[in-house]
Length: 175
Image 1 (tube, rainbow, N blue to C red):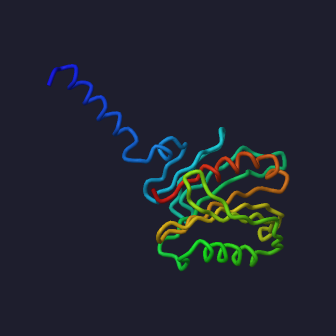
Image 2: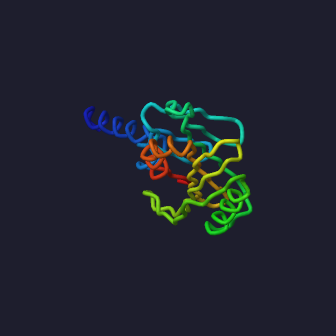
Image 3: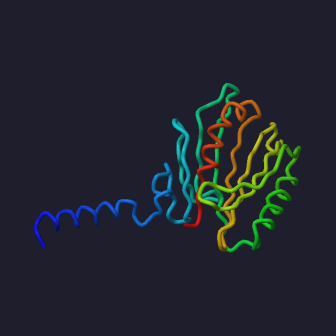
């Protein structure tokens, strides 16, 4: 093989390996968690912290005018009891309804950009002593439940709703 052709093949092989075997739509996202197989965009100015606790990752936004920090966390449950998205949606809603001061603001089915179906629940609750607005994205892939929760005070939620939606709409799981 001529030297130029060998260099071209080597360059193509290296370029193909840059995504580390990730699908193109996943590799381009701002945060990728290979261990739990999910990815999403992160709003500019937000920090990302992987945790060893219940949440696999925690995103924190800049401090809001009311002193709170809008945030997003992703909980991954492996081998959960839910075997359909509808069951997962019912479980998410039942758990939210158990919170002090629960008030349902909306719920809907969504298809994420990657084609995966999801359920979204928006509500307010006051279990921590102050009213918080939350939007949960529930996704089921094989035996994994992904629950992505955006949280802020009602005022900060309104101010950061576009950031929250950018994260939720970009979410990919189970590639």
